Amino acid sequence: PATILVDNQVAIRLSECPTAKPGHYLLMQFRSMITKTLKEERLTRKDITIRWIAGHMDIEGNELVDREAKLAAKRADSASPWCKLPPSLRDHLPCSISALKQAQNAKQKSLW
Image 1 (tube, rainbow, N blue to C red):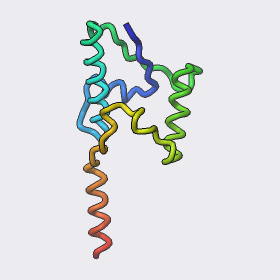
Image 2 (tube, rainbow, N blue to C red; image 1 turned 45 degrees about the horizontal axis):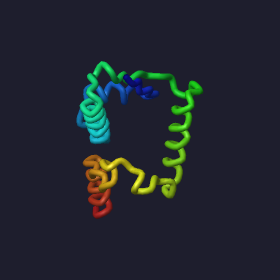
Image 3 (cartoon, helix red, strand yellow; image 1 turned 90 degrees about the horizontal axis):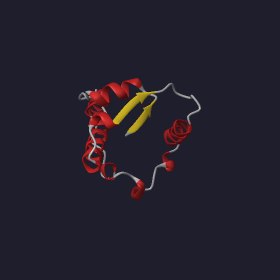
């Protein structure tokens, strides 16, 4: 049995019922990894609990993840080495349809 502590309530809700939103492929990868682990370890869904915790509650792992996420967001050169990434993140990331539309609209506006 395992408990995954998450300080983001939206992420928890979406992990239970993902929708086609930006970044949903990451949730699908998460769900796939959980399913694979359950099968390999001969566990049931009841053996893994995803629980919300308030952020910055002095939980060692949560504080470490927060620091690393902030560092990664600030510096492009802080990216993880390719070999340390999960296989699902080693390929090119999918294009964001929203970003493509915004770029196309900006391009068309500049032409006028």
